[in-house]
Image (cartoon, rainbow, N blue to C red; front, side):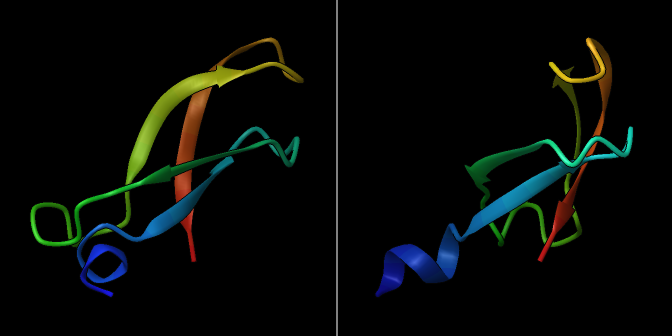
Length: 54
């Protein structure tokens, strides 16, 4: 379907090593590289970088 091709579901895994993940969608046309977002990790109890994994 066209929906999954342009905006795929991705997992954002914590760089703190806790194994915590967020699940979101991204626009592959406007952001073709791997996404890095700074979000809250409840296990580490602080904001850390979350990187896209495939």
